[in-house]
Amino acid sequence: MRRPIHIIPVVIVLTLIVTSAARAFFDEIAQLKQELQLWEEVHAADFTDVIEQLDDITGTVFTDVTEEDWFTSYVSSLMDWGVVSGYKDSAGRPTGKFKPGNYVTTAEALKMAMKAADIDETQCDTVAMHASASEHWAASYIACAEEKGVRMFKIPDETSLDRPARRAEVITIILDSFGDDVMPVYSTFNDTRGHIFESDIAHAQLYGIVGGDTNKDGVELGTFRPDDPINRAETAKIVYQRMKEEARKELAL
Image (cartoon, rainbow, N blue to C red; front, side):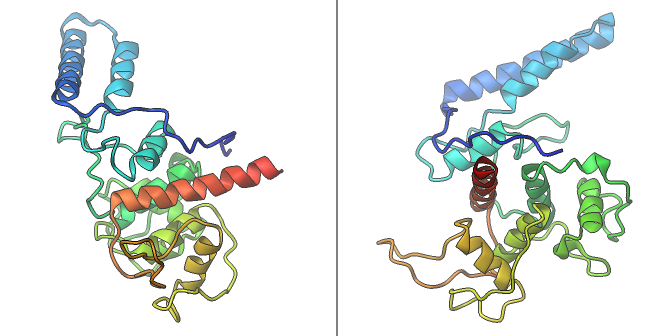
């Protein structure tokens, strides 16, 4: 069941404090969590509720997303809605990093899209057929993608799960996850004509989910660069815009 989206805030409600003090606070919270877990083991105590609250605190601290960054409102909103999360260390502890400049992988893009579309990957009954999925962290998402017909993950086509996703591919993954009916229309960008995902790009442009390239003065260049890789911050913006469109549709009902 899709969660109700009443109003998606355009103005961010979470102010991220990125200072040495914030970093120290995050470290202290992580250390406290470790001490509680150790105490549980030694004394057979139950601090599950407290540890979950600490996870909530540490999970919302991104030391590499500042108030001045253009992507802050998108990343922070998606984080608040449970769509994105930061990186974790080898022990599964949050590092406090989102790494917005990192290229998003095809598997990461799929997870973000399915979270945004409120798809519960644990409810997909199939086992992923993708050759690389069995030992991959995104196996359940890949299985869902195959079940729901996400074109990027069709069998026997086996998209590399850990390679950087391309800009057009991310759009297609998002639209398919939301079950959008993409009509066969042409894109206005001069570098997307004849592209395999041209209609998806045109659809996303029509609904304000994506825009084209601009120069330093904000003048549109008429290009989209569909096969260029895309980073995590840019992907967050596209996912946010698609969720915003979903809210607009639901409010219009």
